[in-house]
Amino acid sequence: MAQTGPGAANLVDLRNRILFVVGALVVFRIGSHIPIAGIDTAILRSEFEQSAGGLLNLLNFFSGGSISRLSVLTLGIIPYITASIIMNLATYSFPYLEQLKKEGTAGRRKLTSYTRIGTVLLAAIQAYILAISLERLPGGLVIEPGLLFKVTTVVMIVAGTVFLMWLGEQITERGIGNGISILIFASIVSGLPAAFAELAGQVQAGSINPLTAMLITVISLTLIAGVVFIERGQRRIPLNYAKRQVGNRLMGGQRSHLPLKVNMAGVMPAIFAYAIVFFPTQIVLLSADGGSETLRDVSTVLSRGQPMYLLMLAAILVFFTYFYTSLVHNPRETADLLRRSGAFVPGIRPGEQTARYLGKVVMRLTLAASCYISFVCLLPELMVFRFAGSLTNFVIAFGGTSLLIMVVVAMDFMEQVQHYMVSQQYGSLLKNMPGSGK
Image 1 (spheres, rainbow, N blue to C red):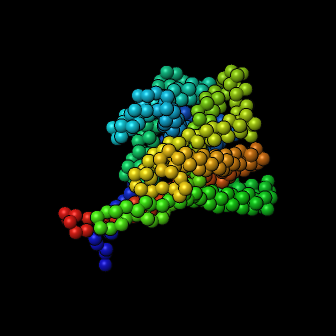
Image 2 (cartoon, rainbow, N blue to C red):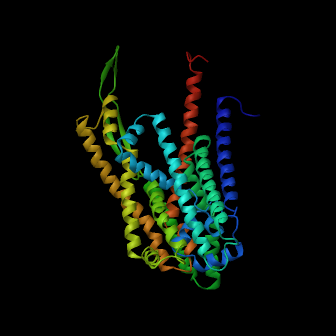
Image 3 (tube, helix red, strand yellow):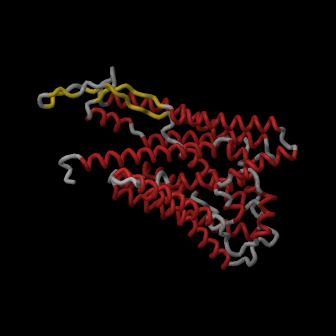
């Protein structure tokens, strides 16, 4: 017999939300195969095979192969992420934006609209640079260069970026989880079959020893286990609740804890870091053939495995780990909330002392998280340097950054599903309670 009642309705709603996410990802993957008008696809494939490597290969992997096809989604969601970074930093520099952030829903809507405008501007600039770079490439890649091609390319790429931005927001509102993270997750997962095929092909051709392939696979599985372990890790701050008289009853006196995740920033530092790395890299790599000597020097210095690139990436990862942690957790607000609820840390006075204590704990956790994220993200860079030209796709897929995004987004998705089911169950119980008006 079919189930009826609130529980069945909740399951149907959850199923519809998951199906919406799946449908949105199917549309996303279809869009990544729609090429820009005026491009000779045969020449494009040969040009990409000859020039692809390093950051360009990594950028292509994160875009789900859109760059190698020069689709309308070539820029992916990177302009939106870059605009979000700029807006978050601007809220700390401009009092007007900081005030908007404190105004609740209305302020957040204005900040979101500014982020959207910034996304369109960044996408238009990058699309125009891409159009000029494509015309400079030798071999007749662009069938009819000129103003019409530039305008068409800018319009199509900006439209694709805006569509992805809208699709990510729809997934967040009507589906489950963070829409932007899920789109990046889908881009990475779409490259996994090619990564496995590359590994199998190298083993079959004799370029890679089977034992070496097994060792790389074991390292990847160990890294997955390590990521899951760290992401599940918590520092539990003990809490006591003060006793108080409520009518004829004595309330309080319980013991609890305040859970603080080791990695509060999640996957956002990695996404932000590569968004910043990708922005100048798109200009440098796409303009390298027709660019100046300075651009070629920058391309060499920022190539994967080079010390300057590794140092820059590590510094950006550490910065954004601290920055994003400060956005998601404010020790003063937490201390004030604990004081108002009658909770206190044993041996620590409520208020300012509690805020300082929580700040120290958060700083230690953030230091550990920044080291952890930097290690996970820098590991594939070193592995690509070691296996350059043989296992590039497999190392990118399972080396660290991609793996970190896949594991964290998958874990966050499952937690969102569990929280949704629990919230719906509590909502149904409250509606059915006597005196609820139902």
